[in-house]
View 1 (spheres, one colour):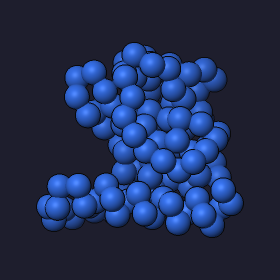
View 2 (tube, helix red, strand yellow):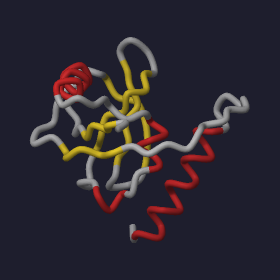
View 3 (cartoon, one colour):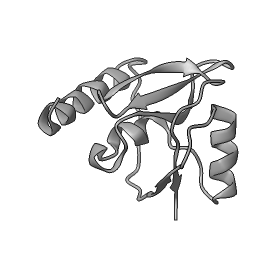
Length: 115
């Protein structure tokens, strides 16, 4: 998949995620700062703790979908968006796909900082 195809897939995913609940939501424009990718994969709880230790937080699913894939390792990244108490959403930057995974599984982490 080339970069143009990846960007088109991300736009398609944004439309899909936005249409899941079919409710109107206004999201104010804001600037976030991306930290470095963690040196190792970790489970969802560890990822939350690690981001908090760094002074940041896990990005939401929408924030990950809006991220520039050129700055991510082509792999799976945790989002802060929970599906259930056992599952959370991830974004796969190698295929630009999203899905849910057991929180106990280890994925890559990249924290965001709001200021």
